[in-house]
Image 1 (cartoon, rainbow, N blue to C red):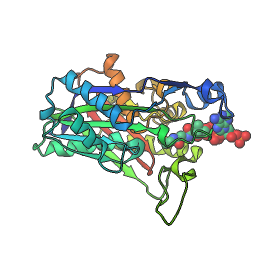
Image 2 (image 1 turned 180 degrees about the horizontal axis):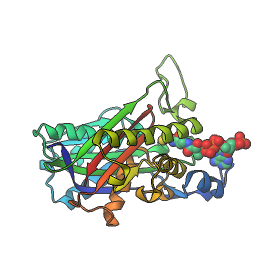
Image 3 (image 1 turned 60 degrees about the vertical axis):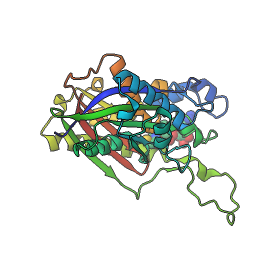
Image 4 (image 1 turned 180 degrees about the vertical axis):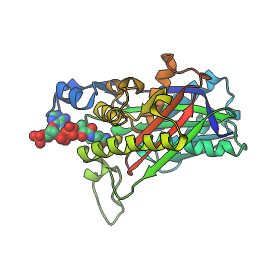
Length: 322
Ligand code: COA
């Protein structure tokens, strides 16, 4: 047994919609520029809900959809880099709220690759056969670390959460290729030490800072190479893959990956127009929509690659059968 079964999948986004027109009233940009250069038309922004609030909505939906009792959850893993607190973890807050009294819970920090890393970690726990039901949620409230006066980054991000309930699958297929390069960074939030000696005010290092073009080029190059590596590793070709669910960072990045892999964009699920870049949440939100739209069906055997890339730098793919 190496595979994992997605027993249920759900997502939750805040109800407040922030469209490009509104952003163009406070920074020098236009709806046309943002749509053309990023693919984003609007994003959801939290008006007070924190990361755990979004995750709890996802967890409750998953329990209901799968008919699972909270006591039967063995592990809760939340991938996020915008937690409510340093401690307790978001995962512990979720565990408490849903009554998963037999579960242990922890967070994982790998920015936009967090959900892919999380699925990989969950698979290892399931392999031991000691754990049967693992909840993996990717969630970020990026509006907390967005510099709303920076037109180069504020246009990109949105808030959201998505997740899956995973169990072991005797027949299921699973492969992965995870990577990091800590010497190439996107800085995001709380980068400086604040203590009584520093007397530092909230400043530029509290916000996400990125070199857009560098990240763009990294994403296209490394995500496509990563997918090629996982295909080579498994002896498959791109034609054996039914869907690629990429992190939603920029529609042109996704087009670039498709071009490098010499495959059709049709294979890629894209919903960035509605949510922007929601970091660790983007892949599970996409998966959840694919199930809702009937593109994916449990037990169909469809082969799907989830590919994440982002801060750290981190990147990686998992190839699994649905
Ligand atoms: N509106 C209008 N013009 C803008 C703008 C905005 N919101 N943001 C930048 N510009 C301008 C720049 O100032 C520049 O003007 P210049 O040519 O006069 O100097 C021009 O548009 C091109 O800027 P550039 O940064 O080269 O644009 P780009 O095509 O690389 O797009 C990003 C910028 C940020 C959209 C793109 O690089 C990107 O999506 N990068 C990766 C995203 C990312 O880092 N995600 C987080 C990790 S996954």
